[in-house]
Amino acid sequence: MASTVDAVRDPIPTSAVLMASSKHIATKCRSQNVAFLNCKKDDPNPEKCLNKGHKVTRCVFSLLRELHQKCTKEMDAYAGCMYYHTDEFELCRKEQEEFEKACPFE
Image (tube, rainbow, N blue to C red; front, side, top):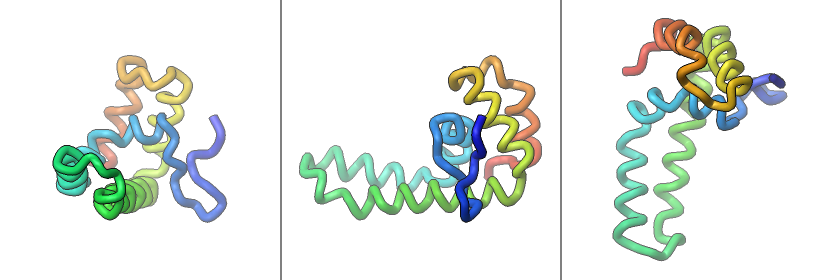
């Protein structure tokens, strides 16, 4: 797998990185996601929810940076496994356990 970070050392949000971080995202960015989904439900005009969508994106990018700084090795190993096994959680339980032990979700 190619590097999970870009030239400025920010995590690249590939499907493997997002899947590996999904529990953290669900916990940390819950309020932003709920606000965005409620907006989309209440107003079919996509323009009305852009600000809430940007808040979700900012939350996820901030969280990915934080996770990558706190537990680089474990996150890279888990995302690498997810990439190799096409996002199959069942095949990456060992890496998942190590990642979640190093970076427990709050």
